[in-house]
Image 1 (cartoon, rainbow, N blue to C red):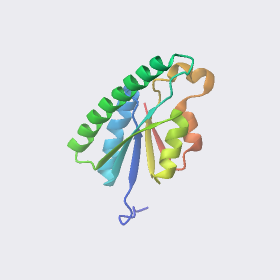
Image 2 (cartoon, rainbow, N blue to C red):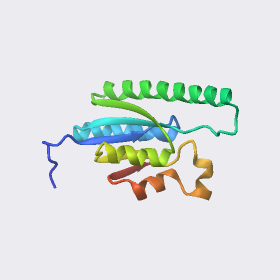
Image 3 (tube, rainbow, N blue to C red):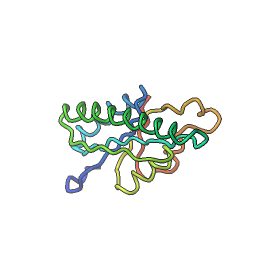
Image 4 (cartoon, helix red, strand yellow):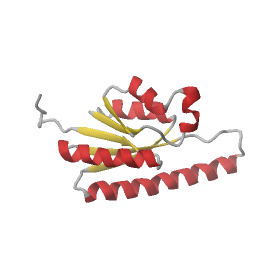
Length: 145
């Protein structure tokens, strides 16, 4: 099967700052280089539990956003240093639902994610985010270990 070079191949990678997501980024950069694809680095900022005070929620949101912004800057530098055309986005919501919506809305051809992220503690009880994404994404999903 040959690739249609007239269509711009698009790869998304989920980056939450975990070790697993950095491994996923490395693989996504390799995939993007081999396919001459554009790479979309996507981070999801999850909502803070509303049981905290408004000032605590605002402080936690700000800290979380700044952490994701720093990770995105570093990721973009790594990808562009490898010669990959790169886009970054931070969106809010549930990590699984927001990622599935992003790949659908932006017609991604592939999504690369790590097998565990920051929410892996709950994986055994609730099913991993990776598993939920694989079930619901409308594109190929590559899970990196």
